[in-house]
Image (cartoon, rainbow, N blue to C red; front, side, top):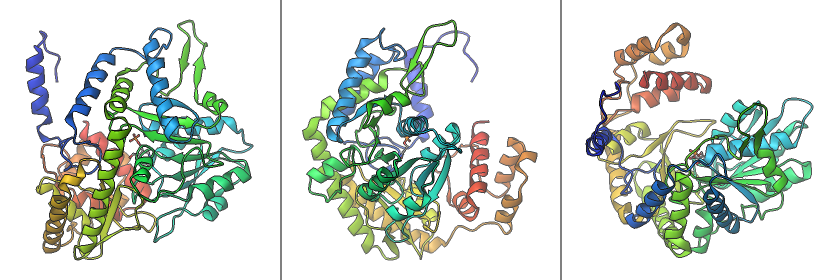
Length: 473
Ligand SMILES: Cc1ncc(COP(=O)(O)O)c(C=O)c1O
């Protein structure tokens, strides 16, 4: 884009945004089973959008200048603490930032002789790896059970050393939607004097409603002895607009470890509760309004619908020839794999039919699979979703697995990425039929996923970074 010489009208800009969004996945309607969370109640999202807009220009940088921020944040964080076992919290921009702050607090609360370390099950979200990377913490990866996909307390304990500053459990983990044994993991952490973080980013604002709707949900929150912090995203099952999460600390002193202040310059005094400094209060307003617009009753009803849809989906998938649900999901996240059809092709086939089903690469002995996040809106379309999955599975069986040009994986595995600029990388991808220019609304991803799946983890990461660089060049 070049900056226009003269300012343009709002209507012109909105028309252009509509055009830019033509190829986007739809954020409403339930046909996109990851990334977006739809209540199926437009008036709730409208209330959130209105409040977001009202708070848009308010800067949370200085809470003394904008007391509305403090009041709203106390209300939102208070509601989360009420539901999840108490504690003192911080409103953040998302799960990654909540986790980053929990890791920082744990690191700073527990000085170690060597480099600080944390024990992290392989199914935990990469936000822990990111936090470790940014904060100079070493990750000790903990394998999970190959059948249940849960981490065991014994395996977590085996990973704890004198330098461990944090152990992690997920409630649930995203890939297969299963809850780690939080009580056991937290108890062993407490016995070793190590803080324990429960990543309830996806489950924190879901599991209590599922429990109330009749699901068997084990204790997982701050009321569990030994749990010292917990993350809960409101832009997931809180159904708030993006940019909304809460991190809770059992001990207010630990929350202070997450804060940052600086008086080391001649400018205004800096007090930050989050990684970001200046930021819009829009997401806080959106989360506040979503809570108010739905209320307990609204969330419980969404919980009931979600539970019914997740059960229908699990049972339906089990009946589709060649497909199987992975593990025994405890929540509304369902992953399925297949020994007969290429799940990456299945995902592309579903996309051709207007549905986005999220592919997940094989990792740590867990096979490649498809992930579906069931939300409040899924129930009314669950039969249609199952029909598409069955059709896409048939089509994938007929097409056979993604065919990779001979030698491609080896070529990429040995590629000297530093010797290739982004343009050359894009050309290389194009030469094997992969278009990274982003033009198509229906990208065929099976080949890309198959190549990534065949590479070791560190190579996948290097290629993904290059991929990102190319699509933004
Ligand atoms: C369990 C879990 N933790 C953390 C995150 C990271 O959240 P965010 O994308 O908001 O940073 C996610 C996102 O899916 C998640 O599922």
